[in-house]
Length: 256
Length: 285
Image (cartoon, rainbow over all chains, first blue to last red; front, side, top):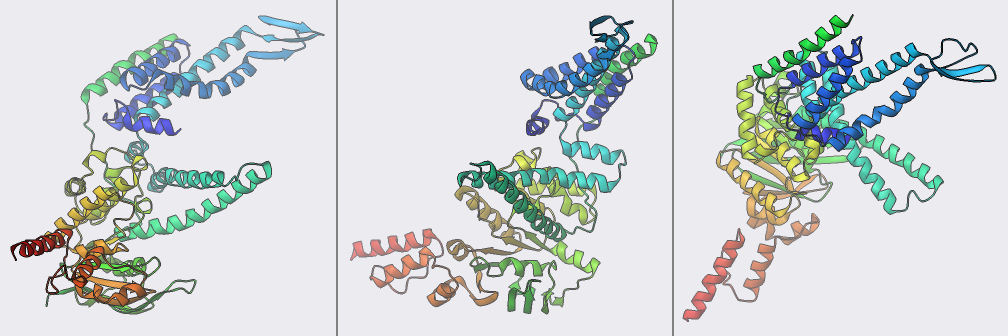
């Protein structure tokens, strides 16, 4: 998770306007999820892999590893769709019958499973494209532009920032516990972990009070207003996005 | 006598748990001066600072800004905070946004400035604190010193009249702490009033026009740095030490290697020069 965050700030597409990247990722994802054919998800997958690896310059190894994360969940859920158990052996395309119980797969089920698998994978690659090329702070700016309620975006700003602050604190406490043999036994580990959590909870309250004070010192009056660095709007990028999306949408429509 | 800008009159403050953090604090800050507040940990420096821009409200006594009691009502308080900025000790509790640029823009936007004006101020603050190359980095990937400089930029961008720094050099390496002192010098030349708290006696002695020593919630002594440190009992009682320049100077005078009329050195160069001057005269005779 942390490595995704680092790449978001250091990839080759970081200067591209966040609205353009979000638009590209979101439209492609919708197109991928609504496709009636397996061809669209395959194209989307190739498109996003190209975007992430070639354009954004994310190492292929990192991308493959990230794609493997949802793969295990996906395989399990897809297998349950593809395979069925029945007492009626008719209609199976590939099956094994043991004591009048048939375990196997029906052809339409197999197609559904493969289709679902590819659609999910394609959609995940779209999300990865957004996550790997656009920093959270800029995604929040896009949400602001889309008139998402301020309370949600403000919470996102603070939560995102403080995930890192508290992770740092937790790491320090854990290291200190390790250096005093806090995790040598099962019992000790439970105790150390519970102390870590209670220490962290205390810190959360102190920090939030300090944060409020320091924000008040900078004239905070109940609304977090910030300026985001302007990124250049590129007509070329919009044309490229349209150029990719129209054929994909046509493919979806014509297949029916 | 120059104009007073901030004044604490008979300030008393205790925390909710009953700790007496400030006892009858009286302190006057002149416009444009460099005031150092020296004190050991827990002396009440940070608490005093929070009074100066109205974050804490005193139990008794009052704060005056430019001769008038400060008001704790919404609008007037914002007006005060526009003039008196605080850079907090821990940058992690000051930086609320993961984006350096966004965080610095927070203060000036709250002042109701236009976006162009804010962008200009952010740019200036980034230049002044030498953080321009960090503007695209997230705050959680910065080093402690970098975070500290960004939090300073966040206050500078509001262009306050008085800037209060709580332990500014704690946690900075020597190079960055020297650069920070240079930044303070520039701000001072621009006419800003600067208050800083520290327990680094050498820094306080060389930099400040005036020093106040705090101990246990009280202002124990205040005055020009030279005079203050000539009374070592002040220093001992406040759990502090003498600046090395003064110790060295008095040792040299005591041993007869420097004439007693030599002025107190304010910087190491002053001291080296007076030693050089002395050795040159002794060569001649």
